[in-house]
Length: 417
Image 1 (tube, one colour):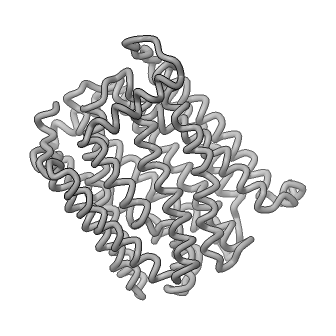
Image 2: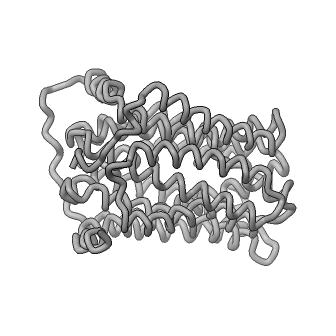
């Protein structure tokens, strides 16, 4: 099985795709972590709700644009969308660097308005990138390798997600200073590297549509497809609610400060603990691809994610908290690989952009809405009780989905290839 997983790396275009995914993930994670740190330490010290508002500012435009971006990803070159999106992110990083640099003090006068403006525009750009990325990946590899590709894709993504916050925390807090400008300068370089590797991939044909559709008809057909497929709908719902209720990532700065009584340097490593767990799990998945027990594995791993979130809330030791977050990432990565594989195997190529957009609204948006939910609940209930509540709700959702779709536990991916 390992040799089969390594064989896919002989596909040069897929390898270029993985490099691009790594650099863009590293840049985005580093950029957003820096924004969270700036917001918490420079503007709203001790206010968890302010951290949640960052997620809300990103996700509102993301949701509003997602259906249109999914339609565009099915009628426009997906490679072109990715290149233009990376260019937009590069320009945003240049602005953030100028905003944070002492050489351009005039930008600092805008305060948090400037930060939120970039976050809002980032939500729009991310909507197009998210709609095009997975469908573009599917055009680079044969159908029989979708599961292996999903494993490598999540491995690379989580590796970038590990390094991004660590680098942001270390660089931002270097020598007891606030060096956000250094972080954003590195972001600029990373986005340029992303454009380079996407540019090395040859343009792919735009999928042929079965019939001419208006914008409204095109969007509606994508929604109907998802809601008529119980397996896709159940897989998306599990991931959405797990991230919505169980995602405590957004308030880790506050947890590090108020519960563990540590600074931004400690935040970086703690923030990456879930990604470290996910990467290590990916090596296990290289030997054992989700197959006959995929449905059962999906339910159990999401439930375990919720339980580990509850245990994280009860931690007062840094390394024990790290271990619990590590396990949340390990269990979450199994569900991500299964969900990606189900979507790719069950979706026609000419609908992948729209289905990917629906997936992004279900799962991608739940990260930011979950960030707002975490911040708001922490404000209402207290930091630790809010995390316990979120983990408990995740376990409850697993039981509800299992009850509504008992066939999910019988899902066998090997029959879909």
